[in-house]
Length: 275
Image (cartoon, rainbow, N blue to C red; front, side):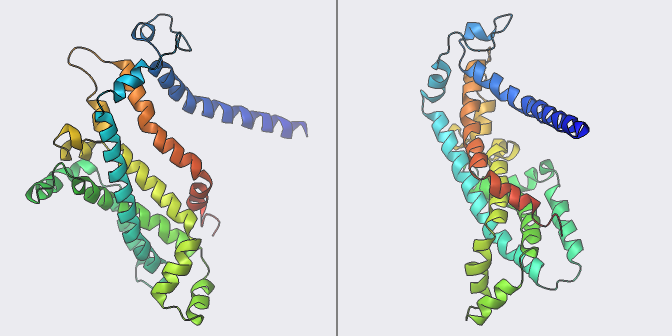
């Protein structure tokens, strides 16, 4: 009993240490965003802003440009998520249900494409987007992001669909549904955890992606949040308070997304783990 209690205490200490390591950077970011310029460079540093001000947040939104950047990121991430799920869901369902030869090889190819370095694709894709006159427009980011997100989404959804009993489709077919109707009306609704997991990972990737966003956006109005943050620095100074405030604003939607759908994301990631 004593050994078990010690193990439990040790486990909670380890959890607390991991949580602290993850949360301290966010706490310090919030601290800097609420501090005055003189307090940011104060030594020794204050562990809470004295006084706490919102001037940095006001500076972020005073021109309205950063709101435009947030809108761009939201539109690009949302369109990428919807398009990727629309393409990945039927492909994953086919891989999970049909007798496809060399399925393992196909899945390995999908994973291989997913880990292919983005820097190797930026040149040809830029030329293609330039010839289509899409540079600085949403499709210039949505299409490459979809190509990069599709393999991972197919991999996650294939494993999730494999955990569903075939009796679901059989019952739908007996009730008069076509295979397509059974997929849309029965399989997709019960696959919410897998879909939410894929959607969250795709949205976060598209929201945070920097390289393509930097190359494919040609004007300040077309930039996404990561590019806007990188260009906050002035020629002779680094406005750390403003950068910190903008970073807090930019990560808030992602944190909210994870907080709202945390349970479904975990369910989707662990689906099939015990098969």
